[in-house]
Image (cartoon, rainbow, N blue to C red; front, side, top):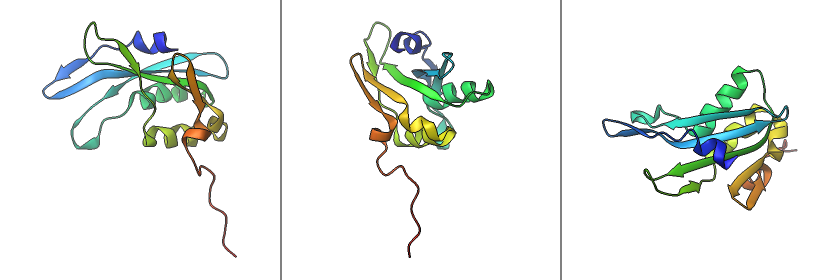
Length: 129
């Protein structure tokens, strides 16, 4: 998964904004891999790499994520770093399908966690008496 994400890292500078310096790969319950890159724009209108990969997945009418990873590289020749999903991405993954709370999130070559463990208090609230 790390290699699939790293394969689409192609940073591109536009003015003071960098596109594609973070990439994500995910695999669905059908075994298909989707990838995407981040787009950093002004005024918060951009999106994370995980969003791009998930959008490709949803476009293909798939919703269940078995495993997901995001990677970053500072520059050509620099090592690849695995980066955990931000809070917005964690919630986005959860809302795509309830079973995605069990998604395996890659945090390193030998380290993973379920989304459920990375997103505490993920259950909807219960009504008060």
